[in-house]
Every structure is written in C-alpha cells, then in structure tokens.
Image (cartoon, rainbow, N blue to C red):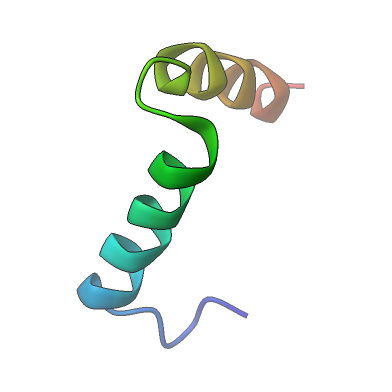
Length: 39
C-alpha cells in the first residue's frame, strides 16, 4: 500500500493529520500510536 510513497506524499499526509488533530494534540497522538505499535 505504501510502496510508492514519496516524500511529497508523506508531507501531504502529515499536513492533513496536523489540520485534522491540531498541533497541540500531536505529541499525545504520536505517543499513543507509538505505544500501540509496541504491542
């Protein structure tokens, strides 16, 4: 699914995530994603 993901695609996806969740929630969101990936 992410085989042809370029730098521009990653930047656009990151910008959409920032717009959806807001910059203040990003550290909490990143921490929860990191913890869920360790399972």
